[in-house]
Image 1 (cartoon, one colour):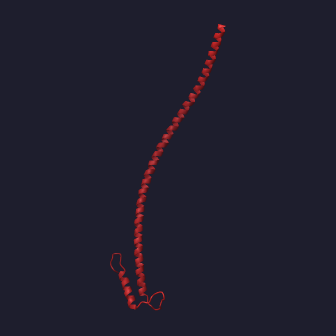
Image 2 (cartoon, rainbow, N blue to C red; image 1 turned 90 degrees about the vertical axis):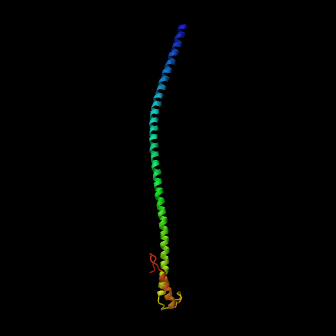
Length: 145
């Protein structure tokens, strides 16, 4: 019986050793897979770092471009505002010239037929109005024509 008990214990130890060896093989496979995943994860992290650096450089370039465009746009807006003011002045001068020319044309028109819309002006008054309109006309250098 003691011999049978020793064989039973030794058989139990052998079975447990076999189970331990099987479990160790299973753990070894899992560890190999984990190592492979670790290498793939390191490669992925390296790619992400590279992509992040490229994106940071691109963002820096975009910021520089935005700054340049903003400066350029600001100067163009200032130039456009200046040109708009110049156009306003020229339009006002053109309007003034047109009014003076129309006064001259009205004053120089012969009064052959009475026009109900145009009040009748005596010839002396017409000549005076024409002379005044003519004297108001100025050249660009400021001298009277």
